[in-house]
Image 1: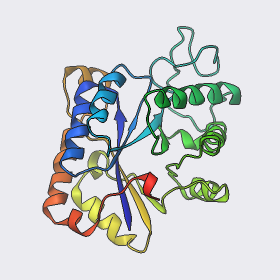
Image 2: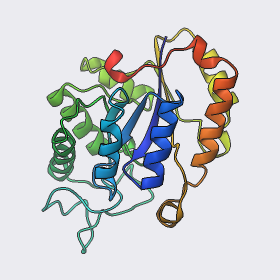
Image 3: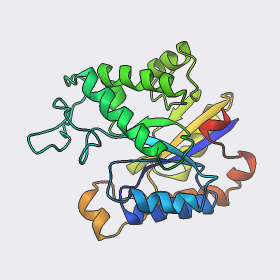
Length: 244
Protein backbone atom coordinates (compact mmCIF):
# COMPACT_ATOMS: atom_id res chain seq x y z
CA UNK A 1 0.00 0.00 0.00
CA UNK A 2 1.13 3.53 -0.81
CA UNK A 3 0.17 5.70 2.17
CA UNK A 4 0.24 9.47 1.79
CA UNK A 5 -0.17 11.72 4.83
CA UNK A 6 -0.63 15.28 3.61
CA UNK A 7 -0.49 18.56 5.53
CA UNK A 8 -2.75 21.25 4.09
CA UNK A 9 -2.20 25.03 4.45
CA UNK A 10 1.58 25.35 3.91
CA UNK A 11 2.36 29.06 3.52
CA UNK A 12 -0.53 30.27 5.67
CA UNK A 13 1.66 31.35 8.60
CA UNK A 14 5.20 30.94 9.87
CA UNK A 15 4.08 28.75 12.75
CA UNK A 16 2.12 26.42 10.47
CA UNK A 17 5.10 26.24 8.10
CA UNK A 18 7.43 25.18 10.90
CA UNK A 19 4.96 22.68 12.29
CA UNK A 20 4.69 21.06 8.87
CA UNK A 21 8.45 20.87 8.37
CA UNK A 22 9.03 19.50 11.87
CA UNK A 23 6.31 16.90 11.28
CA UNK A 24 8.01 15.85 8.07
CA UNK A 25 11.41 15.59 9.75
CA UNK A 26 9.87 13.42 12.47
CA UNK A 27 8.51 11.07 9.81
CA UNK A 28 4.86 11.92 10.46
CA UNK A 29 3.84 13.27 7.04
CA UNK A 30 5.04 12.75 3.47
CA UNK A 31 3.49 15.61 1.48
CA UNK A 32 2.16 19.11 1.94
CA UNK A 33 0.12 21.50 -0.19
CA UNK A 34 0.88 25.19 -0.35
CA UNK A 35 -1.55 28.12 -0.45
CA UNK A 36 0.39 30.12 -2.98
CA UNK A 37 -1.43 33.43 -2.36
CA UNK A 38 -0.79 33.47 1.39
CA UNK A 39 1.61 35.87 3.20
CA UNK A 40 4.27 33.32 4.17
CA UNK A 41 4.84 31.52 0.89
CA UNK A 42 8.45 32.68 0.63
CA UNK A 43 9.13 31.38 4.13
CA UNK A 44 7.50 28.07 3.20
CA UNK A 45 9.52 27.72 0.01
CA UNK A 46 12.79 28.43 1.83
CA UNK A 47 11.98 25.71 4.36
CA UNK A 48 10.98 23.30 1.61
CA UNK A 49 14.26 23.90 -0.26
CA UNK A 50 16.01 22.43 2.78
CA UNK A 51 13.66 19.41 2.73
CA UNK A 52 13.09 18.67 -0.95
CA UNK A 53 12.05 15.05 -0.39
CA UNK A 54 8.84 16.43 1.10
CA UNK A 55 6.24 16.21 -1.67
CA UNK A 56 5.03 19.74 -2.44
CA UNK A 57 1.64 20.18 -4.05
CA UNK A 58 -0.73 23.09 -4.60
CA UNK A 59 -3.61 23.77 -2.21
CA UNK A 60 -5.79 25.68 -4.68
CA UNK A 61 -7.43 28.59 -2.91
CA UNK A 62 -10.11 30.88 -4.32
CA UNK A 63 -11.87 31.63 -1.03
CA UNK A 64 -9.36 33.34 1.27
CA UNK A 65 -7.09 36.34 0.74
CA UNK A 66 -6.05 38.22 -2.39
CA UNK A 67 -5.93 36.49 -5.78
CA UNK A 68 -2.84 36.07 -7.95
CA UNK A 69 -4.58 37.25 -11.14
CA UNK A 70 -6.61 40.35 -12.09
CA UNK A 71 -10.05 40.79 -13.60
CA UNK A 72 -11.84 37.79 -12.12
CA UNK A 73 -15.09 39.47 -10.97
CA UNK A 74 -17.06 36.32 -10.09
CA UNK A 75 -14.44 35.39 -7.46
CA UNK A 76 -13.88 38.67 -5.59
CA UNK A 77 -15.68 41.40 -3.71
CA UNK A 78 -15.53 45.15 -4.37
CA UNK A 79 -12.14 45.33 -2.64
CA UNK A 80 -10.59 42.68 -4.90
CA UNK A 81 -10.52 40.09 -2.08
CA UNK A 82 -11.81 36.55 -2.54
CA UNK A 83 -15.43 36.10 -1.53
CA UNK A 84 -15.86 33.84 1.47
CA UNK A 85 -19.19 32.09 1.12
CA UNK A 86 -20.32 29.28 3.41
CA UNK A 87 -22.07 27.25 0.72
CA UNK A 88 -19.95 26.73 -2.42
CA UNK A 89 -21.92 23.96 -4.08
CA UNK A 90 -24.31 26.20 -6.02
CA UNK A 91 -22.21 29.36 -6.16
CA UNK A 92 -22.17 30.85 -9.66
CA UNK A 93 -18.48 31.01 -10.51
CA UNK A 94 -17.53 31.92 -14.06
CA UNK A 95 -15.42 29.21 -15.66
CA UNK A 96 -12.98 31.69 -17.23
CA UNK A 97 -12.39 33.42 -13.89
CA UNK A 98 -11.68 30.17 -12.04
CA UNK A 99 -9.49 28.86 -14.86
CA UNK A 100 -7.46 32.09 -14.97
CA UNK A 101 -6.85 32.17 -11.22
CA UNK A 102 -6.06 28.48 -10.76
CA UNK A 103 -3.70 28.48 -13.73
CA UNK A 104 -1.97 31.55 -12.27
CA UNK A 105 -1.53 29.72 -8.97
CA UNK A 106 -0.01 26.71 -10.71
CA UNK A 107 2.34 28.91 -12.71
CA UNK A 108 3.43 30.83 -9.62
CA UNK A 109 4.35 27.61 -7.82
CA UNK A 110 6.27 26.40 -10.87
CA UNK A 111 8.32 29.62 -10.78
CA UNK A 112 9.97 28.29 -7.62
CA UNK A 113 11.42 25.39 -9.63
CA UNK A 114 9.06 22.90 -8.02
CA UNK A 115 7.98 19.59 -9.52
CA UNK A 116 4.40 19.83 -8.29
CA UNK A 117 3.43 16.64 -6.45
CA UNK A 118 -0.34 17.01 -6.82
CA UNK A 119 -3.34 19.34 -6.74
CA UNK A 120 -5.97 19.65 -4.04
CA UNK A 121 -8.18 22.50 -2.87
CA UNK A 122 -9.23 24.60 0.10
CA UNK A 123 -12.76 24.60 1.57
CA UNK A 124 -14.19 21.56 -0.26
CA UNK A 125 -14.60 23.38 -3.55
CA UNK A 126 -14.87 20.09 -5.42
CA UNK A 127 -18.57 20.24 -4.55
CA UNK A 128 -18.92 23.06 -7.10
CA UNK A 129 -19.32 21.79 -10.67
CA UNK A 130 -17.59 24.79 -12.30
CA UNK A 131 -14.58 24.53 -10.01
CA UNK A 132 -14.40 20.76 -10.50
CA UNK A 133 -14.38 21.21 -14.29
CA UNK A 134 -11.46 23.67 -14.05
CA UNK A 135 -9.67 21.42 -11.57
CA UNK A 136 -9.67 18.43 -13.90
CA UNK A 137 -9.02 20.49 -17.03
CA UNK A 138 -5.85 21.92 -15.51
CA UNK A 139 -4.78 18.59 -14.00
CA UNK A 140 -4.89 17.22 -17.54
CA UNK A 141 -3.18 20.26 -19.01
CA UNK A 142 -0.28 20.00 -16.57
CA UNK A 143 -0.35 16.19 -16.21
CA UNK A 144 -0.68 16.37 -12.42
CA UNK A 145 -2.07 13.87 -9.90
CA UNK A 146 -5.03 15.03 -7.83
CA UNK A 147 -6.76 14.47 -4.53
CA UNK A 148 -10.21 13.07 -5.19
CA UNK A 149 -12.28 13.78 -2.12
CA UNK A 150 -15.33 11.71 -3.08
CA UNK A 151 -16.07 8.65 -5.22
CA UNK A 152 -17.49 10.76 -8.05
CA UNK A 153 -14.35 12.88 -8.32
CA UNK A 154 -12.26 9.70 -8.16
CA UNK A 155 -14.26 8.17 -11.00
CA UNK A 156 -13.90 11.35 -13.05
CA UNK A 157 -10.15 11.46 -12.46
CA UNK A 158 -9.72 7.88 -13.57
CA UNK A 159 -11.97 8.31 -16.58
CA UNK A 160 -9.54 11.05 -17.64
CA UNK A 161 -6.48 8.92 -16.74
CA UNK A 162 -5.49 11.36 -13.99
CA UNK A 163 -3.60 9.74 -11.12
CA UNK A 164 -5.33 9.74 -7.75
CA UNK A 165 -5.52 7.56 -4.65
CA UNK A 166 -7.97 4.73 -4.10
CA UNK A 167 -9.16 6.27 -0.83
CA UNK A 168 -9.07 9.65 0.89
CA UNK A 169 -9.58 10.12 4.63
CA UNK A 170 -10.83 13.48 5.89
CA UNK A 171 -11.81 12.16 9.33
CA UNK A 172 -8.55 13.15 11.06
CA UNK A 173 -9.93 16.62 11.83
CA UNK A 174 -11.22 18.41 14.94
CA UNK A 175 -12.88 15.80 17.21
CA UNK A 176 -11.73 13.04 14.88
CA UNK A 177 -8.08 14.02 15.10
CA UNK A 178 -7.02 11.00 17.15
CA UNK A 179 -4.43 8.46 16.11
CA UNK A 180 -7.03 5.69 16.35
CA UNK A 181 -8.91 7.35 13.49
CA UNK A 182 -6.02 6.62 11.13
CA UNK A 183 -5.48 3.11 12.46
CA UNK A 184 -9.15 2.24 11.93
CA UNK A 185 -9.35 3.86 8.50
CA UNK A 186 -6.29 2.12 7.13
CA UNK A 187 -7.35 -1.21 8.61
CA UNK A 188 -10.82 -0.91 7.05
CA UNK A 189 -9.26 -0.09 3.66
CA UNK A 190 -6.28 -2.42 3.77
CA UNK A 191 -7.10 -3.84 0.33
CA UNK A 192 -6.54 -0.41 -1.25
CA UNK A 193 -3.38 0.21 -3.24
CA UNK A 194 -3.18 3.83 -2.13
CA UNK A 195 -4.66 6.06 0.59
CA UNK A 196 -4.31 9.73 1.46
CA UNK A 197 -4.84 10.93 5.02
CA UNK A 198 -5.53 14.66 5.21
CA UNK A 199 -4.05 16.58 8.15
CA UNK A 200 -3.71 20.21 9.22
CA UNK A 201 -0.59 19.98 11.37
CA UNK A 202 1.17 23.12 12.53
CA UNK A 203 2.09 25.25 15.50
CA UNK A 204 -0.16 28.03 16.79
CA UNK A 205 1.24 31.53 17.33
CA UNK A 206 -0.69 34.79 17.75
CA UNK A 207 -0.75 35.49 14.01
CA UNK A 208 -2.19 32.05 13.28
CA UNK A 209 -4.67 32.38 16.14
CA UNK A 210 -5.97 35.65 14.68
CA UNK A 211 -6.36 34.39 11.10
CA UNK A 212 -7.32 30.72 11.38
CA UNK A 213 -10.37 29.10 12.96
CA UNK A 214 -8.62 25.73 13.10
CA UNK A 215 -6.51 25.82 16.25
CA UNK A 216 -6.05 22.11 17.06
CA UNK A 217 -3.05 21.73 14.75
CA UNK A 218 -0.56 20.99 17.54
CA UNK A 219 -2.92 18.31 18.86
CA UNK A 220 -2.78 16.68 15.42
CA UNK A 221 1.02 16.57 15.63
CA UNK A 222 0.81 14.93 19.04
CA UNK A 223 -1.65 12.33 17.77
CA UNK A 224 0.61 11.50 14.83
CA UNK A 225 3.47 11.04 17.30
CA UNK A 226 1.27 8.57 19.21
CA UNK A 227 0.59 6.80 15.92
CA UNK A 228 4.34 6.51 15.36
CA UNK A 229 4.78 5.04 18.84
CA UNK A 230 2.43 2.18 17.90
CA UNK A 231 4.88 1.09 15.18
CA UNK A 232 2.44 2.11 12.44
CA UNK A 233 5.13 3.70 10.28
CA UNK A 234 7.20 0.53 10.38
CA UNK A 235 4.27 -1.30 8.79
CA UNK A 236 3.22 1.38 6.30
CA UNK A 237 5.90 3.29 4.42
CA UNK A 238 4.91 6.84 3.57
CA UNK A 239 4.66 7.83 -0.09
CA UNK A 240 3.84 10.84 -2.26
CA UNK A 241 1.44 11.34 -5.16
CA UNK A 242 4.43 11.25 -7.46
CA UNK A 243 4.90 7.61 -6.41
CA UNK A 244 1.47 6.57 -7.71
